[in-house]
Image (cartoon, rainbow, N blue to C red; front, top):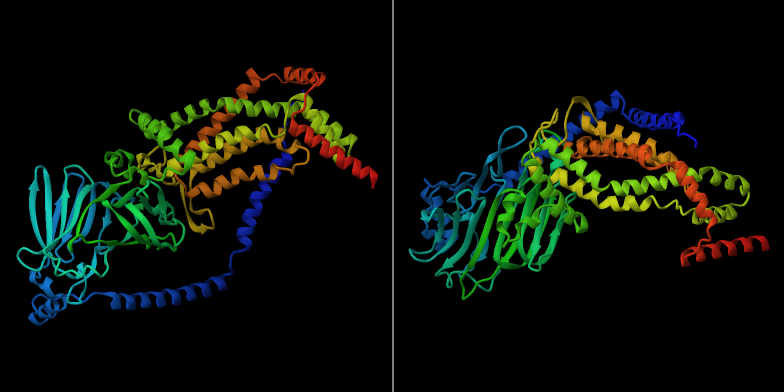
Length: 616
């Protein structure tokens, strides 16, 4: 049989593709004069934006109540009416356990700081979900004397108590000694989940039940990762309906939903950390919005998205009574699966359909098991080996198909020469040859389709697996983010301002894999376009687009393609004998081959077309 030779022209073609990419980048760069003009214009724009932002902040900024000014206090109490009974006292109360630190403000009764004690950001700062006024949480309502109030304007009176091992904080906005609006927080040891209740007592004559009462929750996602763009890709407002369906707002652009119904919980996911609100009395409707705050991936970018939820509440006999939960913690299956009755683990982005099923019930448990006794990078390699071994029958089928096509190559070329002036006849005779030989040019597609769910599931698993966060391996200091072997003094479009090594290794492995497979399969398929150009784009795409993806994902693809190459070499060397395949094909060609309905229909259509061509 003809041995496959190294195709120098193909290599030159691939190098030319890369050269064209570099040429395109260099020729589209502006001149020094254009850069200077652009810089001046950007400075003007930034100055105008800063001025506009400062003005809007001045307008939006709430006046600070001077508690030492008796006139200001009197005006404040006049504005809030009956709720002026509560003393106007500034201050915060701390709620904490071994994993979570919270500060609750007297003003508004809301959480003004939520910090996780066991995690740090990419630059070693504590991970905050709430900090420096990035969030607001409160009620808007009307009173019987026609005042429209917002709890963020009200002062609450704090009281700390114990409920067994739990710490309870009661925040009350009072209208009398016994009548009040209460926020009740209960924190448990070693848990990120709080019990949170909203209730009123004796306010049936104060609240205007006929007017809307709404819980308004706004929060900007604080940046925690070295790439704001990458983190923003996995930052999303997710919500669970009463029937169990999971819905999401867009992760890539501004989005809003005016009237979602039957909401069980809402999650403001910030890649690896989440702020979640759940209620046992499901919200009948909700108005939701998400605004993208990332414009440039620069150190100055502090926030990712701003999420807003407006949730109408109902009174019963003129009073409010809602039992809820607040979660400020990691988007980690180990933590979220503790609350199966709430279904919070469904907020983890496993992917949809079969992909999510594989991720949730195969890859996550498998990796959790392996990383329990192996270093995290080694666990990825071992899991990759197991996946490739399980998929090796598919690889065998694919390579067998390629081997058959290679064996038939001389006969296909002979038919091409014989019927070079009659494409229809050439196609017809080629199909007959395939049918007799028991081969098909499309037989290699089915193995690829079988592997697609695995490919996509892993594509979702590595960037979102909390188990990989800040876990080092070799030169990568975080397997959930990109590795860096060199910083670039400039930014290349689509590529970035750094060089990652794992994508380079994965690209090289893919290149050699393509060299082994593409030449004997795709190009020889009659009636199909030359696929080599498209196939050789794969390494280039891996090199460019995966430069800013999780290094764990690139490590997987590198090892996976390397193993696939060795498996294919082993199949070729020890399992598949091309001479035997050729002999078997020749034997099959001698046997009468019964056509199925599809093949018969195709043959009849071709014969009809051929006949029509002769009669013209």
